[in-house]
Structure formats: structure tokens, C-alpha cells
Amino acid sequence: MNLVDIFLRVIRRSPIYFSQFKNLVRKKGLVPTLKRAIKKIYVSVVSRGDSSKRMRISYREWMADIESKYLNVESMNDDLAKLKVKPKFSIIFPIWNKSVGMLSKALDSITNQVYDNWEICISDGSSKRVKESREYLKSFQRKYSKKVKYSTIDVEGINIIENSNNAVSLATGEYLVFMDCDDEISINCLLELAKSINENPQVEFLYSDFDKIDDRGKRFDPSFWPDWSPHTLTSQMYTTHITCYREDGLKELGGLVKGTEGAQDWDLVLRYVTRGSWNVVHIPKILYHWRVYLGSTALTNSGSKDWAYENQKRVLERYLERRKLRGEVIEGAFEGSWRVKFDIVGNPKVSIVIPTKDKVEYLGRAIESIREHTKYSNYEIVIVNNRSQEKETLEYLKNISREKNIRVLDYDNPFHFGKLYNWAAKVIDGEYMLILNNDIKVLNDGWLESMLEWCQLPEVGSVGAKLYYSDGTIQHAGVIVGAGGCAAHSHRLVHGNSYGYNGALVNVRNYLALTGACLMVKRDVFLDMGGFDIQFDPAYQDVDFGIRLFEKGLYNVYTPYAELIHYESITRFDEEYKRDLESDESNAEKLKKKWPKYIECMGGRDPFFNPNFSYGYEYFKLKI
Image (tube, rainbow, N blue to C red; front, side, top):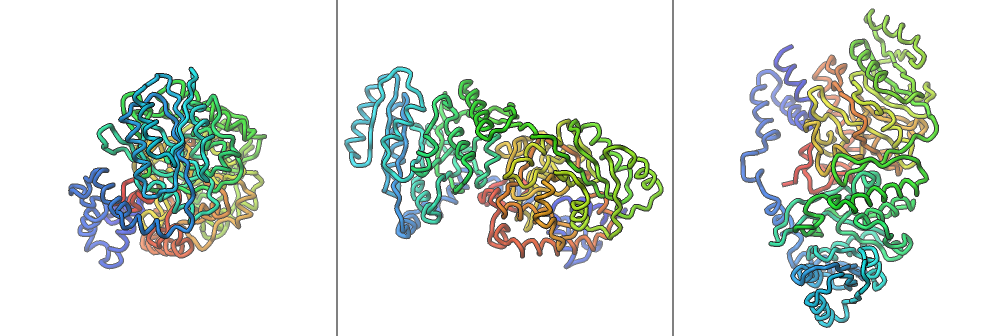
């Protein structure tokens, strides 16, 4: 194997670096310019000037640049003038033992809003009779008498639920915005909510991104989230701030429920999840600043208070009950991270379909790992033999086909991933089909159940696994559509023990697409969808399939509880490199042409990848 071959094997592991390399190949050729190609790729893609000030930019500098573009008076006034509808917002503002200084910062952030159709609904349930604070609030109410409603609850043992519901009872606005009395909102917060409502008149629930702020006004630790991801909400509460509900929708949900203290916002959104129909808007801007001080939940994780942490578990158990599903709620990788583990309903058959052509050592390893780690009983392994010729392989297939739950099918056509699985789906009889490469190794018990528990849900289209390279780094944890100009794997090459951005590697999460190296789908759904689009060969048919499922109203779920090593398309390395280069490029162009609304370079975006992140990286890095 020469230097070019080795370099190609390395560069092919990243769609981003690969796209850069192929352009150089096209222009310059391979061997004569290989050193210059490597240097150029390193400078323009890998390094990207990491040593420069540009790459060391702080969040404060980054946000100052971003906000200068949409927080200037001229742009905000222009946006305000364009509003056809100006809904009234009721700010739900429960108070519990806060100083005048903290209250004034929070309230000033409301009165300084560019958008002016609002009211503040204050419910003061402080157990400590802080005379100074109450005098300040009364003075504040007199100053803004037409916009402020103030109520006190002088009952011992009052809690956040009663206090918040009392504030809700004062509201007269069409939309209710929940705000903690020690936090701040950005000057454009209500304007952005109003803009989104104008663009989506039927919206019922809106949320934004947020950051943290200390007592000196320093902002840090931003949290950028995906668009509506109902299954992510079973593992972590991510729609924390800003939270805005339409008044009639909140009334239908029944407000906040006693017994969920410390997790009341999570309980509320999960009740919305299980209601059955969703009309949600995510505003990918920092509209909320979560106050950090000694004793605040923002200082550490929201699970830092034991009683709140226990209530998180109860809230998720209530979610299970409302869905009429059996299961258990298990602690996740960190406090505030959870796993809702559904019981399998019935005993459905899973057909694990593995295509192979020779390479018996890889197939044997894959099957042995499946046998070792699969405790679920009702499954079969279907090996699709695609013109194997080696004597050792043919003998192995003959012997293994005698086993009870293993079948060998012959597919005597040129290899085409999509056509092969489209054919196999009609031949097998499992209720579920697990699409699985032969170059894998299962690592953990319960892997199959962890995929099946999600795939059985009616709103789920497909389920993907956590895949590692043989060195323990991440190979796949979801697909970012648009990354690298077409599609790339989330957190690829990040250390396998990492939590990922906001827990993305260790928590169940929704994605627009998942890799076909290990993908579970209901067989009927696969057939109803017409299987894979055969115009894509050999790449991107899985990405296209995930997008099509989402377009049909079905969600794709990544689970970190199915772990496998993926030895990265070993069979394909035997093909002609030049043909692969041309084929992958051709398929990328087809995907961009078919789905421009999800590809950034075509003017679209992946709804499960926050637009504040760069599509030039496979990990979640701020866009500069």
C-alpha cells in the first residue's frame, strides 16, 4: 500500500476533510502534489488558524459581534414596525426571598424591552418578611400601575407551584412567559417572541437559547439547543428558558402541578409532549440570562437540590404513566440526566440483516458479538450473501445456516446497498428490521432492546446506535445534515468517554438522520416508504431515508445505550479509490439537490443542529 492509499484511507473518515481533498485531487492529481495537498488541508480545514486570535475568541466577544447585528436600535425598530400582530405577553414572575438588588435587575430587564405590549404578574410568596423588598415592589407597581399586577401570599409553607399559579391567575395576555425573579431577559426577548408569533400564528409553545450571568453582569456558558426534539426531553430538560405558552394551551394543560417542585417546567413541557399534537417554535437566539450565585440552581446542575432531583424522576415516571407504557426511570450520566427505559410491548421479531461478500473474519466477529450480547430472544440473523467466492466464506455460511435463528440468503446482483435492503425487506418476516454492517462488533448487553424500546413508539421512524472506531473515539452519534457541505457524523473523533455538547453523546437525542451502519426501523414503515432511494449509491441513502421519515412526521432517535465498534466500511476500501471519489461527490450533489432546505450551503438548515454552530465541524463549535 503506497502513501496515497494510506492518506486516502485516513481522509475518507471525514466527509469534511474528504471534500477538501477531492477538490485538490480534481485540480492537481494525486502523487505529485500530495505533500502540498496535506499541507493545504491542514491549514485550511484542520487547523483553521487555531493559533490565531480568531479561534481563541471568547463567548463574550462572539456574542458582542452577533448581538451588534440584531440588538441595535435601528434593526429592532425596523422589526417592530413590521409586526402585523402585537400579542400581549404576561410575564409570570413568582418571588421567593430575593433582595432588592436582584429583583431590580430582573424587573429592569422587562421594563427596558423594545416591545411594549406586556404586563408583569408578580406573586410574592416570600416566607421571610423582607420589608425593604416589599416596599420596593409596591413602589415599582405604582410606577408601572397599568402594566404591573402584584399579589402577596402570606401563608407559611408556600411553594413555587402555588406561587407561580397565583401569578398565572393574574394574567390577561394571550401568551404567558415564565421568568425566575433572579434572572434577566435580553432587550429583544419579547420582540423576538412577537416576530415568531407573527410568522407562526398558531404557535402554542416557544422557547429560546440561553446563557448564564453572574452578579457582575458577566455572561458565560451559553446553551444552544435544537428545534423541537420531544424524545430529547425524556433524557434532559432543555426548553428551560425562555419558556412561553399560549394562554389557552396552558389552561388546557392545567397549569403547574403540585408535587413537581424544582421540575415543574419539565413536567409542564412533558405534559405538552404527551398531549398528542405539537405546534412549537424554537428561537435560536440568547433571549434569557440565568443568574448564577451561591445557592442558585444555575451554579451547578439543576439536579443539585436533592428534592428537585427526586422530583425530576417522578416527573418522568408521570410521563410513562400518561403514555400508558411500562418501564423505569434510571439515573443518567450526570445529575439532571435520565434514561426512560421502556418495556418492550409483546415479543416482536427482529430481523438483523447483514450483507456480506467474503471477509468471513469480519462477519464471524460480528455474529459472535451479537450472540454474546443479545439477551432478547425473538430475533434472527439474516446474512445476505452477495456473490462471495472464497472457499472459507462459503463453508462458514453453509455451517452457520444450520443454526436455528440464522438464515443465509443469496443476492446475486452487483452490490448496491439500497437495492439489497429493499429486496431483503420483502423477503424477511420480522416486524422490525435492523440494518447492520458486517464490519461491526457489539459491545454491550441490552443493545438490541435499547433500540427496540424506542422503535416501537408510533411517532419514531428509526433508531440509531452509538458507534466507535476501534481506537475508542466516536464514529457516529447522529448525523448533522449540511455539515461538510452535505452530511457528517455528530462528535466524530471525540473521545468515547466524553459527554458531548450538553450531554449529546450520553443522552437519548433526536436527529434529522442516522447512519445505516446500524439502524432499526419497523419493516412495514420501511416498505411503505419505498425503502431506500436507489439513486443514492453507495453513499447518503441513509441520510435521505432519515429526512424522508422526518418529512412524514416521524422522528429519528439516537440512543447511547446501544454501543458497537464500527470498523468503517472495510469492504469499500477494496474498491477503486477514484471511483469512490467521483461516486460520493455525485451522491452529495444529488442529496443537496433533493433536500436544499436542510443543507446550509443551499440556504437551508438542519432543525436538530443549532444555527449558532459551524457546519464546518463535526463537533458543536460556535460559528465565527
